[in-house]
Length: 180
Image (cartoon, rainbow, N blue to C red; front, side, top):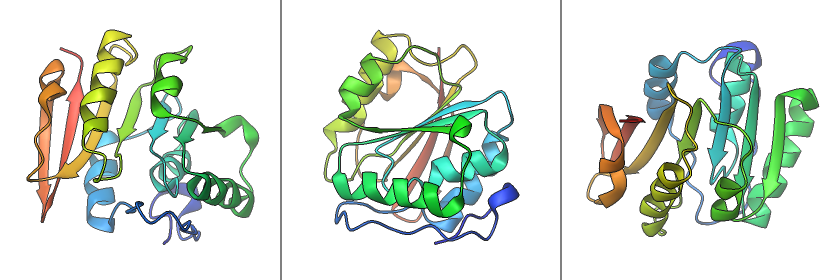
């Protein structure tokens, strides 16, 4: 896999050995980053980070800082190796080996972008994450949640937010959400 945008364009990203991980496809990345227009004011959270690809794309696009969170050891190791291989300045990232619930509940800032893309086998993580984000008022005023899911999966708590764009890509859908 390679970074597709920004100053890290063309740099390789390794994929860890986490069998539940499914990196975001190139078409989906294109939709996401053409919609977001990330810049130096953005503080980004990549929950269920996996390879960290969305976070690395965000750094490459000029984000102020990216917070990677995953509780899978193989994913955590892959992110750390990618950071080392990309020779990233430590001012641009923080990596957390933790459960998403603990991570979200302990945030001390309001992110402008949250990537929410749990393993498809953990369908309840969508609703639980959205509930925690809403209950704890985590998302910044103009912040955006980018949620990638299977088309057939239903998410009850999506109604907690304003859906301003949905893009269907084969079996997957990408939702762009804002505070109501």
